Length: 333
Image (tube, rainbow, N blue to C red; front, side):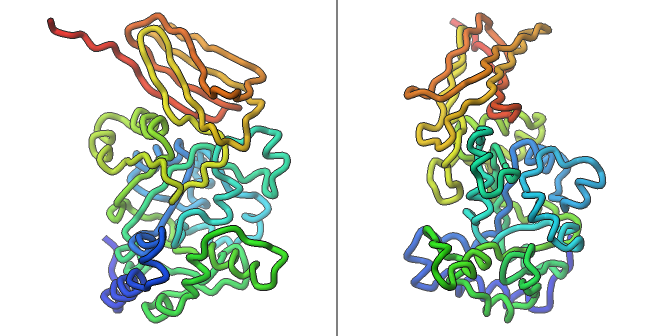
């Protein structure tokens, strides 16, 4: 367990005071001060839970363990190597970077993006207790985007109290042409950093965008971890954590005769995708492929499967969008 800062108690007081401010507690941001936030693709999330740690990007790259990279190479190229060797979290969800990266985007959508290589297909949010993380002696935080040389790296309760919280917690659309708005974007990216790795002792919740993605995350975990974390894994249809602009599986209904997938109806990226559904029945495997799959008005895909038990995985452009196992229940009468 990490040692604590001398002003650890004061850090808790600062966070409690922040949460009581009218401009926060009377809004959808009322719960933000309780947590610090880290999001990553579902396949990275599985690895994090398996290993019991969040690791720095540098460590994951050096050990060839970065399953899905959602960062923009151009932004990362300008980031100090010392920051890359830290676990990075945010003071808030729905950062500007997340806006560009979140969700399964078609190649057409990515080609039009401001950051076409920033892509987190199936984001999973890890919510850590903010007071516990910020009180660690090795924890630092910034007043803005650490990819910028303008950001200050800070540490104390006094520093925390003096952060530009109204800008860090700013919500809503930003007109980049207006004076001062670029500073809001910079502040929204304020970060918390811990050198090399962060254990999961302060982890409070794991949020998925939909019931289907929660099912997939739990399915991908080994049974012991599934039992340990299933009460912390939550599916939220609210927009408080996710932008929900791009394609994802909202619900999946599996039966012995078919699998039905209902996709997000408000997607801004309907395709075309290269769709692949892999089915494993006993020792046999087959796939259902559509080369140019575009979401239609129903946003529902049906796959025929005549089997009492099977494992199924759905991919869009090789991004894992859903996975689960179906087993027909025997009724004992």
